Length: 171
Image (cartoon, rainbow, N blue to C red; front, side, top):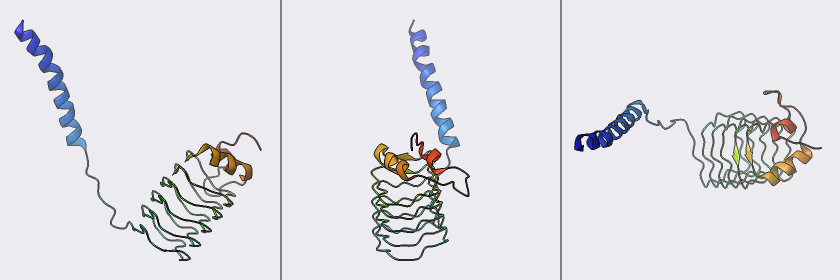
């Protein structure tokens, strides 16, 4: 009776232990990108970053008003609490970026790729979005509604229409 109780307790513990060891053995360490750039809290307004490789860069709480990021790779960047007011992001790749509480008012997002971004509490008032691709983006419902009111064009790189990428139902 005791041996059965021990088996019942030992077997699940042994299986769980083997599973944990297996996961730990298969895990790979995270390697920091040597080329990633950190502009946290920076005053980078009116600077020219056009056609730069800024993948994985951090712009947390940066002031980038009027900066030029046209044609730049900003994929997987962090823009949390940043000010991108009047910023040129035409043709920029922002795929997979975190844009929590970002001010993109009056920004030029013409033909930008914003696939799989997380843009919570982010504002796009007056932003030009012709040809922008928002496929699989997480946006506040109200911001998506406002963007749909002026969504037009087809992204020349992805071939996706702005309206379709935003899931716009009505004109």
